[in-house]
Length: 215
Ligand code: AMP
Image (cartoon, rainbow, N blue to C red; front, side, top):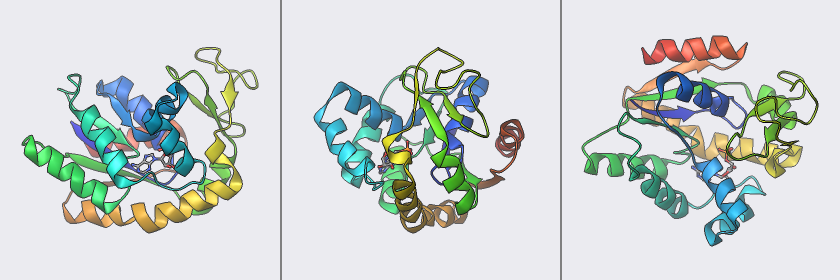
C-alpha cells in the first residue's frame, strides 16, 4: 500500500505514521527526518536544507524531489510505504506521480489529518522530540508528557525542542502550509484519493479512524 500523509505541521501525522508503520509494516519515509539526519552527518544537502528549515520555509523542490527519488529506489519498499511530509507543493505531487507512473505504480490513498490552525500552534510550541535519530519519539509537555521530564520513555534519550518549533517559525510554517501544501488536498480529492480524518482527540482514536479509511 502506497500512502501519502497530509496535514499541517503538528497535525500528528508523524506520530500516526510511526504507529501505522508498526501495524501494517510498511516503511515511513519522512523528508523532514531525512534532512535532519543529513544535517547531523554534516552533508552539503543537510546544511543547505537547514537554512530553509530554520526559517520555516520549504526546501527547494528540486532538492526534495531528488532526495525522494533516491529513497524510492531502495529495495525495502515492495510492500509499499508511507510518505510523511512529502509532497508539500503541487510540483512535488506532480513529480511523484511521474516517478510512480514510470514504474507503473501509483498512490493508493492520501490521508489528510485535519487539525485547526490554532490547535496546531498550541501543539507545536509544546512539542519535544527524542534526540536519538533511531528513535525520534515525540512528546508534548501538556498532552503527552514523558514519564520523566526531558527523557524519552522508549530509549532514555534526551528530549529537545526542534529549532523550527519556536512560535515565530511555527506561524511561518503554518502560512507556508496554507499557501503551498493545502492545495494538495484538492489535487488528491480530484483524483478520488483523499481520505479525510479528524485529527483532534485521543491519539488512538485518530489512529482507528485512519485504519478505517485505509480498510
Ligand atoms: P517536517 O519534519 O516534515 O515538519 O519538516 C521539517 C522541515 O523540513 C520543513 O519545515 C521544511 O523546511 C523541510 N521539509 C520537509 N519536507 C519537505 C518537503 N517535502 N518540501 C520542502 N521542504 C520540506
